Amino acid sequence: MEHNEQRIWMINQLLSEEEDYRGCQIPDDTQEQKNLLRALMNVRPPRAISKAFLDIQDEYLSAENEAAGIVDVDTLSSCSSDKRLYIWQGDITTIRIDAIVNAANSGMTGCYRPLHNCIDNCIHTRAGIQLRLRCNDIIRQQGHEEPTGQAKITPAYNLPCKYVLHTVGPIVDGRLTQRHCDLLASCYRSCLDLAEENSLHSIAFCCISTGVFMFPKEKAAEIAVQTVKDYLDAYSGIEKVVFNVFSDADREIYESILA
Image (cartoon, rainbow, N blue to C red):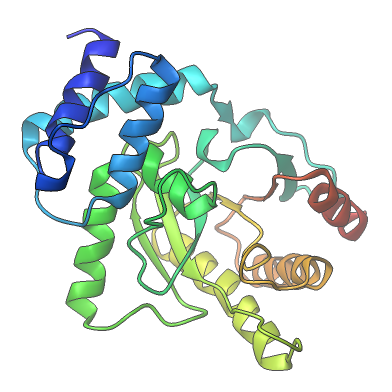
């Protein structure tokens, strides 16, 4: 099955799962087809799916992720006097590294808004349906939503990294408090603890809580850098920590702190 045929086949399989989707027309445009496939994956609840679907999905996503361009952590240059710390501006789903950090919500099964550009949506989309299923298993087994400041580890499935660390950051609805700051620091420590426990040597952090969770960006970056530095000074197993930024403004904030 050719790449384009795989995409159409998957769309048809997902459309067939819901009575409400019957009669939905698949667009001719390639990008519109990709958007439809992503939207269907975004809204699909965590339920069983056939091995045949996953096999074709994995082949398709591997090709898509390769086409997006993969950056190896070993090619990055540190801009800090501490050679364990790196800043990298780009799409976190394209970095080949031991683990990336996902800023998850407390439900932890991903973002269900079709085509939403949050990191949670992007990671689940490019990892594949298995990631939502695995996260759902974790939540079901623990019997409650994921607490703020803690973290869980899962395989990365079709992403170029090996693992995804999912952490729930604090929501700042009003005045920033010391409790918010303590919980954000706990997010970073929890992820680093999981990296240590699983013998990982490199990890890429996103800017946890600074998007729709409204944590002030400068303060969040200060907490991130200080927490990571303190942790690395106490433990020696982690060799590279990447602060992944998306905007120029975020990059400038981290550059100023690390300088």
